[in-house]
Image 1 (cartoon, rainbow, N blue to C red):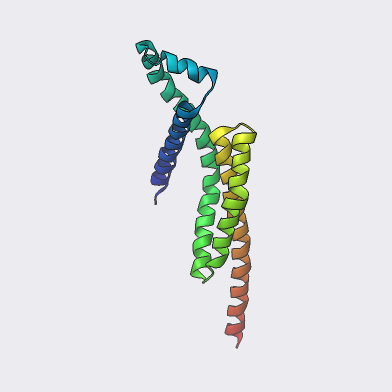
Image 2: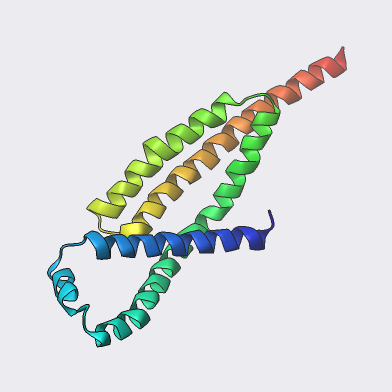
Length: 161
């Protein structure tokens, strides 16, 4: 996949997640502002204001999330390459365990804490999942270096016989 395609996918998914987040808040939020909006929805002026303001809010939220997504792209590429290398070397279990721990033990709990307890919203969720992805990339790289050294020693041993 080219860089532009990957960027297009990240941008599209980011906007989609932001839109879904705002719609969820609009549909299920029960704040005083929400109750006031329910009263005002019949007013055509309200429809005109929300048709301009809501997309701007989505764009602002997407921009904040894109900063996080741009940062983790390096580590995402790293973990993809290293996972493929380890699979090619016949080790499929290690990447699976690293991804399981990275996303479900590190990323998702940290993201949920940043999102809900720290009040960072969708950006916090992305930050937590990015932290899990960074951990996966670094751990898998260390494992790959270890595997590559073992293979190098074996090849030297075989070559000297």
